[in-house]
Image (cartoon, rainbow over all chains, first blue to last red):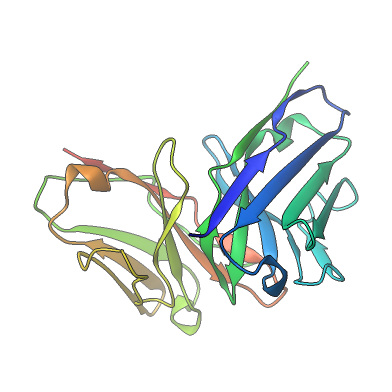
Length: 117
Length: 107
């Protein structure tokens, strides 16, 4: 059974940092591109970042470029997202997703990030 | 950038058919995927490539895509179908584009 379990969310002050993690199981993690998607309350879904299967290529949404860093450890079947210089508008539920060509066939349950003073 | 537009809410009575539109410029030329979000649960893919249903998704869920509108249809709506539904496409820059989501209410 495919499982994606996010962790690391919490409350952080503007300008602060947070590291989100996603533990994958039930499939060959190293064969898949992975993404982070966030859901902002009342504003819908926003694609955040992707990383290719071997971790050599990462792409970011303009809204997070230069502040967030996606990475993966295929030996540990984990996907991470480092959030730096966070802003109030980064507050959201962050989902780890498995990419299957142009869509996501599996999602985690999400981890909540709240940016406030 | 490509924009997908969904109505904020759709309401139907149990047993009726719910039709959730997703509008985009010449969306017929793109593959549209649909996700279901329920509180406290992991989101679920309900339709991919316009019309394909993943295993485990009831036949009551179907999709179509024509002109500038893709549609998720749910026939024989049940209380358990109450959720937020999002459409999604892939654009040429490796990014994924989502609609604003539709809240389906079962009256």
